[in-house]
Length: 73
Image (tube, rainbow, N blue to C red; front, top):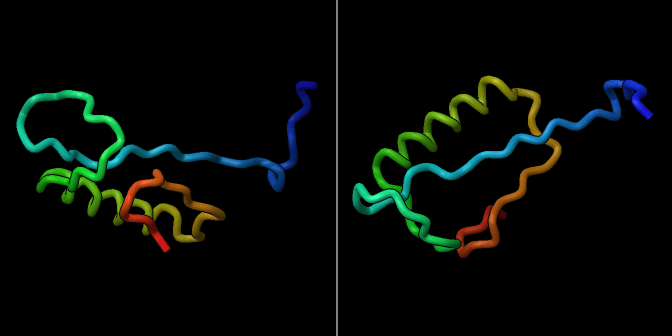
């Protein structure tokens, strides 16, 4: 059962959390809402966009996101 799979059968899953969306300095759980990113959160998102563009130039097989109002099409 512990056989190494060929590379063509392997999958890598990347989990990523959204950028900062706090509207004040208090750290709290706000649930599943469409709170917009604040300025640091937008900078974080832009940074990750650049990182993914250069590091993963071959692309992804699939991308999945939360089921909130703003969905990728």
